[in-house]
Amino acid sequence: MITEEQRIRAERRSHMFKALAHPMRIFFLEKLREKPWCVCELAAEAGIPKSAASKHLSQLKEAGLVDISKTGTRVEYNLTAPCVLDLAACAEGTVLTNRRRHLGI
Amino acid sequence: MITEEQRIRAERRSHMFKALAHPMRIFFLEKLREKPWCVCELAAEAGIPKSAASKHLSQLKEAGLVDISKTGTRVEYNLTAPCVLDLAACAEGTVLTNRRRHLGI
DNA sequence: TTAAATGTTGCTAAATTCGGAAACAATGTC
DNA sequence: GACATTGTTTCCGAATTTAGCAACATTTAA
Image (tube, rainbow over all chains, first blue to last red; front, side, top):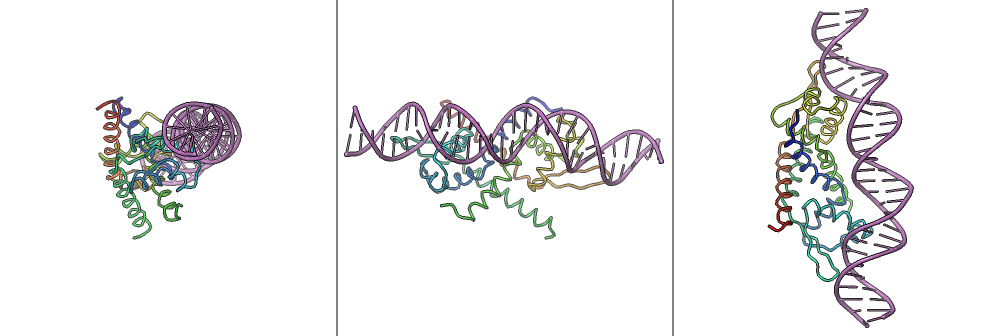
């Protein structure tokens, strides 16, 4: 049987992965690796309305992956957990290697 | 503007995170860290019908995170990318740290 | 052959997420 | 004050995901 602790733990971990489970949010995180960006800049870069960008960034913030600093009306988002992107790269590499192996080296 | 390469890359990565974005699938991966398990065992451990377990495991396999080996009617699932679980640990740590900081250190 | 055990797939309803437009709030500028 | 800029929130329809049950396929055992 699954214990309460295990349930909480899995819940907590999957929560962050939910935040990462969208191409646009991955794109934003990669941009934020370079430097901080504001909402309208990221929206322009991605070619989507700022409301959509704001919502995606809000999810990332809620998950603790990014942080903000306001100056005037401008809201700058910056990366707080670079390790996530590093490990994402590792995971992707493993998956790709595995897929190649599965197809016959 | 967003390049085609960036789009593909973000798509590929978010796909992997989608597979991780469910408590039950996280739970399964943690179990698979110990040893290989078959579908009905994991279903019993989690207290869900085997059809649901099969579908979750199928998603993990499709993402390249697990692998199978059949013997008779039994299908054993095993972990292919242990570093993914490190990613989960990092994610959890980030969430907790951020939450504490957000509440005022 | 019949039955049991194991997995997968189809189906439908419920829940969740997503996208875009508009309304709204807050700040800075003229 | 009037207006522009920047972000957030709300609303709603569309798309996706999920859960549970039944049906089905495959292999093993009696």
